[in-house]
Length: 188
Figure (cartoon, rainbow, N blue to C red):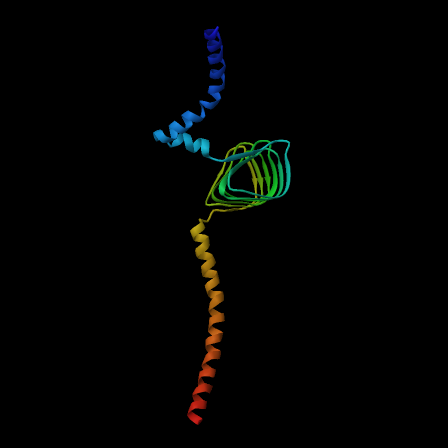
């Protein structure tokens, strides 16, 4: 009888061990030096489903796929934003990379790339160093394809002329004060 119980018990543990088995190979794979598998598993990605409606500000530090409706502002400056075929966005969008398969109404700013795919639609201005608009996509707005470094240089150049008159005025005011101080010393 003991042998029968032992034969029944091993049948039950194998059913529970497959649940534990995937964690052990994942740990073994990461120590084995296969960097691709852990990166794909470890990469954070969030999905917003078709039935979800968000109004307000959406921000995060993970890649995001939106299939639902979002109104307001989307801020994922260091991550990829994908608007799925069912996604409808009425928002200002800021991300590292934006892929549009659905509809976006509002300005889109990306630090790397904006990609409007087939049947994707953007009504608003795009600011990104790289822009791709597929055949069959809809776009209405303007495109600014300056690189980030060029924008910073232009902003600095615009700030320098504005700062120069402010610096010139204190120097002009400083000279009469120095003359007055020298006059007081001489006359004293």
